[in-house]
Each structure stands twice: as C-alpha cells, then as structure tokens.
Image (cartoon, rainbow over all chains, first blue to last red):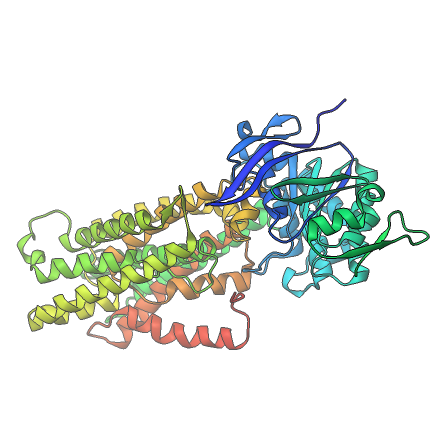
Length: 259
Length: 336
C-alpha cells in the first residue's frame, strides 16, 4: 500500500482572527480523481495553499506523499505536488515554451539552463495536453482555453505525482470545460496521476470525479462517491440554498439544479 | 523547444559585448577634440593625457553606470511585477541624492580634497544605504518583502528626500544651488579613475548575482504564489534582488547622479528584441545600457563642445519620446 499523496490531519488555520479550518481531516488516495466543493469562503483555495505551504497550518498535520509537509524542502514540495492556477496575470510576454519549461524549476540546478531531458519532458507535457501546435507562440496571443492547457502542461512538466487544480475551468466555455476535465481524467488513467480538483460546478465535478468532498464550517461535511453524497439534503446544508436532484439516464450521478 | 540555450545566450551576449566595446571606442575618440584611431597610436603625450586621464574614466563610468541602471531596472520590473518600475522608484536614489546634496551644501568637496577618494560619491552612497535600510525595514512584514509596500514606501521616501533637498537648495548659496541643480540632472563629470573602477567592481559583481537569479526572477514575475509552488524560495529571492539591485543603483547614483530613463527604457527595448527570459534580459540590459549611456554622453560632449552638458538631460529628452512611441505601438510589455 503506497502512501496517500495528500493527507490532512485535524488541520487548523485562520486568516488573522477569521477561522477557515477548525478541524480539517481527509486523505486522498493514489490514482484518485477527487473534487473539492463548497460555498465561497469555505476554504477551497486555502486548502491548496496549505497543501503547497504557501501558508502554514496553525495546528494539525499535513502529509505530502506520506511525509510531513513541514519537514520538506521547497523544491521537494514542488516535486510532489503541482498546481494549476485559475488564471495567471501576464506581465512579460513569455512564449509557450518558456512557460512550460518553468515547470522544470524544481528539477533544474539553481541558475542553470534546462538540459535536453528537461526539453523532452516539456515537449511531452505539451503533447499530453494536445497543445504541441502552440509551441513558440507568445502566451499573450492565446485564447483562454489554450492558456489553460499551457498552464496544465507546465504542471505536468513538474513531474509531480499529485496534481492540484484551482477551478481550472472557471473562465472556459462549456466545450473547453469538458475538454480540460476529460484530459485530466485521461492523464490520471494513463500516467497514474492523482488529481484534486477545486470546483464550483457540482454537476461537472460529479461527471468526472470519483469522489466529492464538501467543505463547510471549517471541515469536511460530506465525503464520498457522487451518487452517495449528491443529495438535496447535503447540498442544502452545504450551500444554504434550496436545490433538487433528478436522475438523468446516462449520467453517473443525479443532476443538481436550484429550486 | 525554442527557448533559451547556453549557446544562444553566449552568442547574443557576445554580440552585445562587441557593440558596447565599439561604442566605448567611438566615445573615446569623440569630444571637444576628435581623436582619430591613428593619432591614438601616435604616442603623443597630449593625446595620451586626453584619452587616459580625461576620457577613459568617463567612458568606463558611463559603461558601468548605464549598465547598472538598466540591469537594475530589468530586475526591479520583474521583482515589483510592474513594467513602469525603474531603479529610482524605490527611494534608494533619493537617499543618494540627499547625501550628495548634503556634501555640496556643507562644502565638503573642498574641505576634504586630501582624501584619496572624492567625498561626494561616498556621501551619496551612504545616503543610498540609509534609504535602503529604511525602506527594507518598512516593507519587511511577516518575514517577507511585500512588493506593493516596497513600491509605496519607495515613492513616499523619495518625496520626503526631495523636500529636504528642496529646503537645502533654498538655503544654499547661489553657487551651491547651481551645483546641486547640475548634480540632480545626472552626468559623468569629473569622475576619477579610482571612482570609476570602484563603481565597476560593485556593478559587475551585482550584475553577476542578478543574472544568476534570472531564472528565479522569471518564475517570480509570474506571481509569488506560483513561484513558491514551483519550488522557488520567493521571499529569499526577493530580499536578495532588492538588496543587490539597490547597492548597484547606489553605486551608479553615487558617481553620476540620477541619470534619467536608462533604467526604464533599456530593459523594455531589450525584451522587445531578445525576449523576456531574465537570465538574458539582465546581462543584455547591462551591456545595452552601458552602450547607450556612453554614446549619449559622447553626443552630449560633442553637442555642448567645448562646454559640458549633463548626459541626464539627453537621456530623458531622447528616451522619453522613444518610449512613448513604443507605448503607442502597444509593444512595451503589458501594463497590468
């Protein structure tokens, strides 16, 4: 039995006086596609920031690949978990190649240049997200969907077994949302990655993720396969809005809609 | 992958080095008196005096000062994630100017003529150091330098230094006031060989360090959180870049005053032609900035011959319109 790529044990965290997590515990298993859901302010993004030590927990323990996060050097953290942000502000007009090669940062010595192996990995990452045709283009010229693929390729180039995504489809249209999630599921299956996806879209998450975790009141309030946790009861409790669920033939989980 | 390779890096920097050296040689010949390459080799003692004692320190200082300002501008733009940043926004140059103005008003130049090094640059450098420490202390919150506080603290500190300088200028004698005005324009007057070489040592060492941090600067310019998640110790990198670039700026301002615009304009021109990889942008800006300032100073000397004109006037007068053209064509980076 290999260690859980990511585990939170009774984690506490607050921004100043505002508590975010009072007792957050869960473990993500190898090869899993898990979605983290919850209302605004429930700490979804904070969870990613804790998992990559952008911020430190006030209490409890976080394990990355079975080892306490606190004891790992920065680079080692980046070798174990790669993050795909929602969107990135662009300051200088880096090319697609340059951005993807930056994914090799935790592997390249100090101020050196990337070697042939790094280039090969970066190229493979672009191919894996079906974006090799974007090579050499400036990032500023790409569409939102293309940019999202490039950020995903950068995360893949990190060669981390755990992929953390912060609403990667928030700015995408329906077709591109589905394309990105299908891509993620394919990568998980083919390359044995573990995927943790933060999402606002309950139905989209349920369509692709094998496990849903709902955050609320500073902890996990519901956790399980979509079919088990997607009940009007749970959703009303989590979001504080009246919702209904209806079974749709062909869908793996009930379809959720506001009442 | 058509990204930077060691070979491409060497080739581009080699070409720029050649260009900078050509500019330096041309600038050695240019001035109130044109000295042709042939006369240069004639062994005439008067020619040797003009070249070695008058022009060489000046050309060297121009290379180092222009290079320092441009390299620091590139680093500050990435550090602050702001394309409008220049070496002067962070208040370090303001502190340096205040130091120099103090030395002028107190009449220290004449009083300390026996010192091996001129006193004014030392005062200016001390002023830069004081400003650096002040701004560092203000912007360091929770163990990290916050870029937005850094920027605001720099702007406010600069305003304060300017007001004190205004007061000193007001109470100074007419002759001192004239001297202050000339210093504030930025120029390469009366720089001794010792001062030029000392500046060069600081500036070259700093450029090597900033170039070595180029890869981290690339990642840091994507945002602090992304940098951390890619394994870069963002807080440490930011501290190092700030301190090193500030020391370089201090060394440049100490000998030449706040020479306008080189630090803002050159990095953008370099990014437009060579791309945005800071492993290349920093040293390329150094070489291009040096070449630009040396040429501008030669042009200023020729234009005002046989008198003197502060090169800072020329860099602003030519640099600003050029920069406006780049902005109008929408090519000078992305304004967030």
